[in-house]
Length: 116
Length: 112
Image (cartoon, rainbow over all chains, first blue to last red; front, top):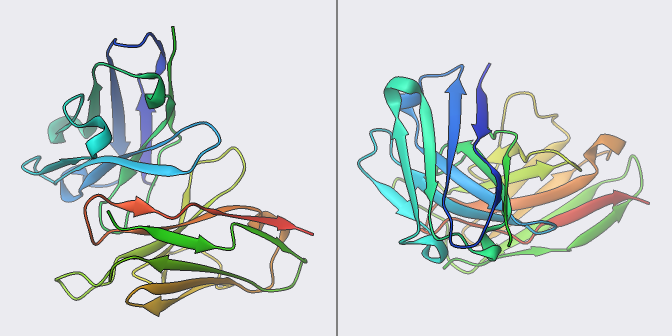
């Protein structure tokens, strides 16, 4: 059974940093592109970033470029999102998602709240 | 960026009746590999999004055949036949052909 389990969310002040992690199981992690999608409270879905199977290609949406970094460790079947200089508008549930063209499995999400 | 416009944004339906959601793209979603990367997701209240349809009309394993997708190029449709109570939620289309990936605004399906 495919499982994606996010962790690392929480309450953080504006300007601070947070690192999200996603542990994957039930499939060969290194065979898949991986993605982070976020959902602000009461809003729709926003694609944040995705990364190629071997980590050689990364795409980050403009609204977080220069602040967020996506990475992966295939040996640990883990996906990461390093978030720096956090803003109030980054408040959202962050989902780890398998795939980048026709994504399929989603984690349960981890909540990030940026507030003073 | 590719804009996906869904309609309607709110869809009250009667149990057992059909429902249809459209998704119009500002650009063709036909990718260089010949596939059209248009997917549909369902998000039930309080849950993560769940995959329904990929590449316009391919249904994921475990998705009831009441759900069907159609379309081409820039216009796509999700149809739910014989709506059941468990179908309540928000439905999103998503394109995987262009960067950045984008989602439609979502269509809220509720029971009348």
